[in-house]
Length: 298
Ligand code: RIB
Image (cartoon, rainbow, N blue to C red; front, side, top):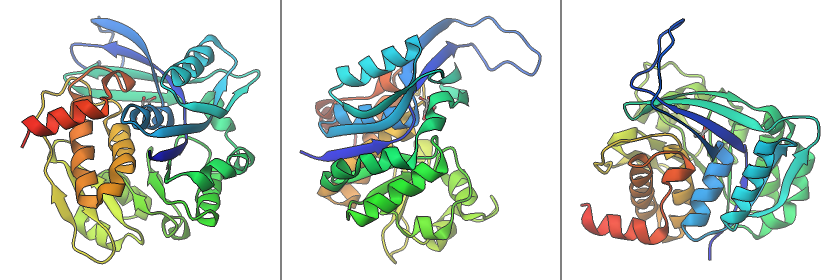
């Protein structure tokens, strides 16, 4: 069974379904409000667990009621929470999300996620050593991200770095990554390039293999010196794209042993299923659902 360690954020998503997005200063009446566990790290952990991986989470929750719910939610998914720390005197991370017409806007307050430390990553060294892959994103402090890259490199465990929310990163960090998994806009930011440069050219410039997500267009991937290749997206009716990227990353890690082409195709399918359902963790499928989907979608 694939073993995965996720180092990242754990949020409570405060989701409002609205007929459209409000403008500045405007008050709208929404259709529905839900609290759904989220956070890029926790989402990737849950998606990988549902696909059948053995998953350990490294992250922080606050000492509030959300913290209890988030912790219990991870446990209910069968995720090892030995390295999830509860921080006294601070709330859990939250994401205020508005969903309208299948699109979303998100405002994240990191709170306890800002307390993930290099020491916490170091404490997880043994499970990182045993893992087939480590997943990390940018919703935790950068020194903890850097520690993750360093410890994983020292333990010869491949890292999938999902650079979201995006910011420019040192080239030396990127050189340590097995796969960088940005969208177009994120890749430009990470490399410090303009948005006017074609994404295929940016993929060639990156000092590491890149799997680039393009929403309904699917994904482009490049491993080594080859030219970027395209996996078209699967057509589904979009209900909520929240967490689609997280689902994609988890599936990529879980299916990587089957080869990059297969993994990217399955990751596109897994993300497409998630987009057709409400909520980040609400929409993540199980492995048998992915198999059934691929049998009925060319
Ligand atoms: O990637 C989606 C996630 O981003 C949401 O679950 C939200 O918590 C934010 O972190």
